[in-house]
Image 1 (cartoon, rainbow, N blue to C red):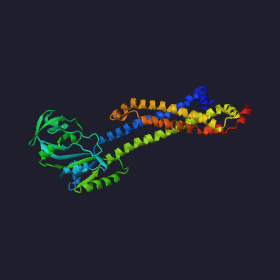
Image 2: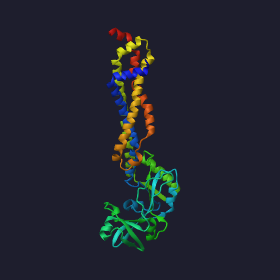
Image 3: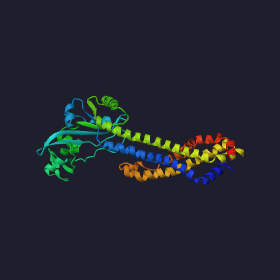
Image 4: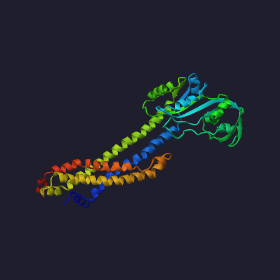
Length: 382
């Protein structure tokens, strides 16, 4: 009788042991597939949520008063708009999401407001990302909550700021911050109102997460930008940068801890079941050795069963893990699930290779016990 036939007969005879072994492999593969399939969405979701904290890198004119900027958030000096083009044209850089702004405090209809001109957000070549800020149409204006409430403004109203007529596109909800007294328009419109064509007061950006130490990143950023814009100064909002980096690292560490623990636990589970299987089959092994079966066939008998369990567990685990990610992922990762969570066929191939190996390795020691067990001891007991 062939080894495969013996394996199938043994499985049929000891269904519970086989089912428990299969469950261990299915559990390991399901968790691996589920975590990996949803992992891309998790990383992307974390990045998107952390971006909602805002831009964490600021570039202003070198001769601007830094103390005033830190107090008011408005630079008292401007710089050429071409600075944005220079930064956006660089390929090997450590920043993204570039946004040029022009800001100034003005008096309008008896109120002190912040006029802010926004350019469309740009990204360096090959690093296109969804914009973090909204884009304002030419001739349109967004009015902050306090300004709209105080002046009785509403969407669709025509307003005149100095000599420039604009249409209110939206009255913003209350934010509890400076945005409540802000009037936002397209950058060229703000330049026309303030009579500073081709000038900007600040470039905002988001740094990359390629450095563990924020101080190292600031040094690199200042070197990169300083060589391009010698008449500008750079600083980083470290609290935001460190929060973003820390959150992403926490998610990665979570997966790094859960998966090894799960795999080790399932490996021990399979090994214990294999030891129990060897103990239950001592008489059978003794008879097989007495009939002339060598160490090789007996080893194949145990490792072959483990490999078969691994193959079946890989298929079932892939289907279950993918189903869990597809069904529960959209509820967890609301922003990125639609594009990022999808069946990964290559994971099935990986599972079909590694799951049998994993099961066989977990059963290796019990298989060796079966090989070296003296059949005479068993037969003497009988």
